[in-house]
Length: 144
Image (cartoon, rainbow, N blue to C red):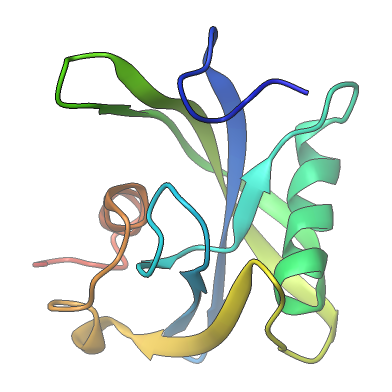
């Protein structure tokens, strides 16, 4: 398995935009990058795994929901450098819009806190840059 920190190549990640009644489901990250910040449920694509399968697996692992993919919402990079200018983390992230099929929201080892947020609750929320970027691109955050 390729290491996440100081990787030799970009890693492919997936994130799920799960909406319900005007709210979006976010998880509080337990690991770097973005430890302690709110984020869309998601994670890395395993070798040999299709991205649609990866997002379904990650959502079920992190928040206990079975989902179906609606569409790809966006694809973008997330690159973090250290103080010496070296690449600490480099991800290519595929953001998905998904719909819940079944399950009950719960936390996990990777996401101890899981919460539904309305758009107006997100302005000052400490969330990952990639989450904020995706929410803006799909117009969930119109003026934030």
